[in-house]
Length: 114
Length: 113
Image (cartoon, each protein chain N blue to C red):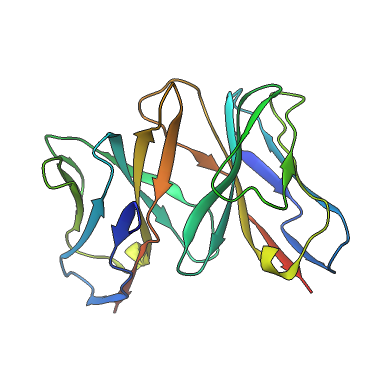
C-alpha cells in the first residue's frame, strides 16, 4: 500500500530534550516536506527536500533541522524543543515535476512540549 | 494579508442541503489549485483539482476565476459523511523552479441529521 508513515504519532516531552520524528514514504517520491498545523494558522511549511541531500527552509524553519540521506526518509529533528513547538506535525511527499501536485500526507504527529 | 483566505465557518447545514465554500488567493502567479479535505485530527487528503473550465466529481463542483483570483467548491445533497474541514490550496512558483503549495486555514462543515 502506498503510504507516508510517521513515528511517533503522539509525543509529550519536556523543554530542551532533543527529539526526532521519523517520516518514511514508499512511493519513490522525490519531494518531501514537513508542516506544522496550528489553530487559526493552517498548515505552514517547515522544511522541504527536492531530492536526496537537497533540503531547504520553508516558512517556519526556526528550531528545526532535517536531513535527507535516503530518498524514502525525511526525519524532523528538534534539537532543543520549546513549548511554542507544541503542534500537530505532518510529513508529506509527492513526485517531482507533476502539475497535479497531489501531496500525500502522513497521519500526523501530535507533539506537546511542557 | 494571507496568501490564501477562506471563511473559517463553521457551516452548519442539514442533510441534503447545498453548500458553497469560497476562497481567494493573492498571488496572480499561482498556477494550479486544489481542494483538500481534512477530517478531525487526521491528515489532509486531495478532494479534487480545480480547472479553469470548472470541473465536477459527483456531488462536488469546483470553479476557478483567475481574473478575480477566486476559487469555489459546491457540495450538493450534503451527507453526514461530508462533515470535515475543507482546505483551499494554491500552487505558486516563487522564482526558479520552486513550486510551493500554500494552504488556506480551512472551512469547517458540519452536516446535521
